[in-house]
Length: 354
Ligand code: AMP
Ligand code: MG
Image (tube, rainbow, N blue to C red; front, side, top):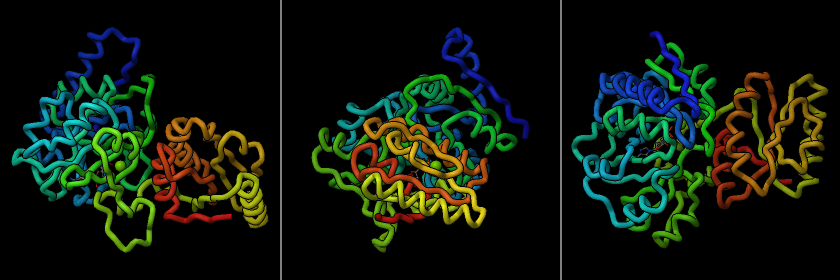
């Protein structure tokens, strides 16, 4: 399949942007697939109300079809058509965090096909804030099902070049728009609104504390951090080993100096065996690492930088054929909780406490 790659620049005349987005929207209405930028990561969009389009999304990604898709809307008024009822707490969260990186799960209405929801009676909904995403969704008919625009098992794409790497030849169009600010680089927070006490199924930029401030008590799915809980994650996608780099990743937790000396000791052992090493560290420690490749995740006071760079680092390590990777640990709190969750998944939950 020929994939059109359309670049959109913030500085372009708005009428030109609209022209490109209406062509992209038209493709969706005809049942095609278009990758588009959002404020979290790039999405792989298809018409959420068209069962064949949903099936094409699974095929393009190589994604198991029991892993439901998030339905993206462009205005709050669109919500009523796809859910059976909007709980009061969902209204409050929508008011506080939409448009933005928050996905809410509600009971679905009959118009949403089972193919979109992976056979569930519930539907995940998000209203993104990225201006290109918002306009594209509107011009595509208002309901765009979109998982992240990566091949299943690869890190979510935070730049157009990674979408092109994974999806060229598999979908109709890629909207490449890398020069918009405020991109977070980690997927949305997912909250289950179908239970009395809403529960976070995937941590993200919108934190548990931010949500609790608006609706009171909020739970968090234990499987997010405890690989040995014996429970199945409530978000089917969280059970898969996502974001897996080709090499082996280990997270190292402890006092900064202990972390650096443990990692350097491991690096020396690998070097003796001729194995290539990589480290993800924060800015006060990065100069201390002796690894072959060292990535700077920025300051611990600004976790947004680490969030926005994490998936790029994992993809670069793959491209650089790094065999053994080490990352400093992050806190189980705030935005760092989302970073740590993605790192744990990439590491297959391998964590060493020094
Ligand atoms: P992605 O689109 O790649 O960010 O993945 C979407 C995530 O949302 C996956 O982990 C899904 O399992 C989860 N998800 C989507 N819809 C539902 C739903 N109705 N109930 C629970 N989890 C959902
Ligand atoms: Mg994904």
